[in-house]
Length: 212
Image (tube, rainbow, N blue to C red; front, side, top):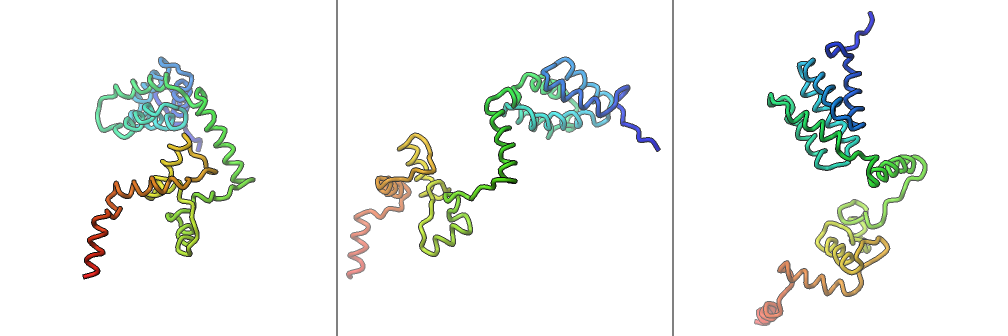
């Protein structure tokens, strides 16, 4: 039995999907809208099919957060309302949106993604020391044993304040830099802000109470 490719009217289903995706990449608004319309006209679930393809393309190719979120919203609502204006508007917007290869950051991410794949195979990295805080098993064990742990970038109160202190001091975060002694003055002021610093009068009254 010969396998029959599914059809969209006079067209092959998968060829139309491919044409839609390629035309969006090329920024061809007219043809992109045409192929989206073919799918939506010739298939009972056409809106859902197009919305899914737009979401996949947004995740793979579009380097514009607003367009990616919009594609996600369209995908979630596909088929829940009969109006399809949002599909065609999104197709046009995606044609004009910045693609990852057009962005320096997008190209950098693509390069580093490939490098990460190779590093994992050939040059696996060690877990950095600052990752071993109290939220990890090894960090928690080390702290219980009395060892100092590197909590400069952790999510605890003191870790968050060390992060802020280092940035305020240096204008950046550097894994080789550590807070100086002045941090503890800052930390005491922060604890007072939290209401965790014992006030002198309260301390004196507590001492007097113990003497009675």
